[in-house]
Image 1 (cartoon, rainbow, N blue to C red):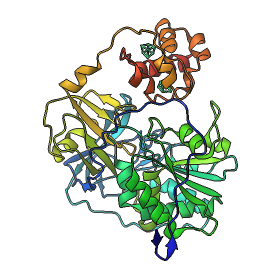
Image 2: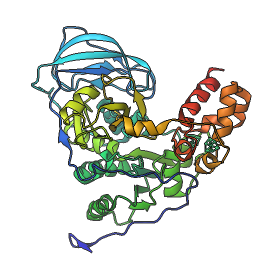
Image 3: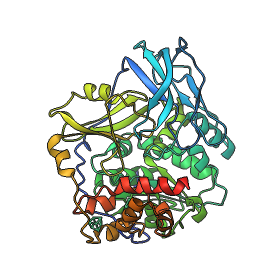
Image 4: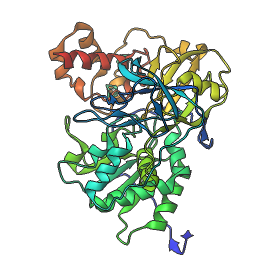
Length: 445
Ligand code: SF4
Ligand code: SF4
């Protein structure tokens, strides 16, 4: 195919075959739903803990007037990230509130004036690596695929890196937020990619996308072909759809054939891994200087009347989002923040979305009723499903006994809570919850 006078590039094949994983139903019902912008809700509750590391410190008080983009949470010492108001209005409360994970955090409640008046934003000057890191730090951007790791830290690795792996796999069922980022915002993604590549002297960039997203692969091939360097150093890799292909270590292995040892970081094998929406957000910030104040997420599930992709002000409650999208066709029995594999079931619909929320799912009684568990039949399916080569059934037994030594020898710390073991379990054992509890026991010692 000829594009813009240039020969179109082809996708590349994986460098290595990843073990384990499960074939999950894709249910990408919203893949063709263009993103709809939600207007300001009446109130937002903006959490101070929206990232890995120390929570931000509130720097506004009750009665303060704020605009879209006003700094309301200063980054704490060490690993942290700034937080900005997502609406204009008045701070009504600084309180404690629950995150979707069940943890408590300081939160700032803002009564919106409905005007969405913005601060004055200026595009940052970014000509050096240090300016890039500072800009990304100021943007408030963290890992937007769900991890929430402050992105500026990834851009300052302690060991030399030669490869940027861009994760566009989006392997969880239902979620199409990253897919829409590729289709709708590829220019932003490419702007960030080439800036990072140049300033961090990255030798190769590899986009990793599952083969169930042919339009996204074609779009990336088209835009990369248009901008391609003479050394062909930015490439698009098509990988087989298999959950959890989007997990960081799996993505690195598929893209480069390099294995990240337990307890090590991607930079230890010369890689930076970034989620594709994170890159798009960096690209937008480089263009206009507007910090991260809104998030695209997929709203779907058997109880939802109108599944769609919606961009919402950060801090909007699940209840307001469901109301905006048209409510429920069946009474919701379970609400999940994130995907059905790695997301968190929440106790009520007042929990607000954060920077790394990428889906809001609601399931009815009929769907949830299928989730009840029975005794383990020792079939071993969880072992063959585990991409980290763990033995989930044995870990469950050790967790029930509270045997910390056994949990350590079984390597429970290496569990990434992907849920592949639970998905394949015929007894429907709640193995992800077991892994989380087991890791808490081990970490407490
Ligand atoms: S898959 Fe389920 S039933 Fe089979 S061994 Fe693992 S925990 Fe037990
Ligand atoms: S044990 Fe952990 S890493 Fe392995 S499949 Fe289960 S949740 Fe995933």
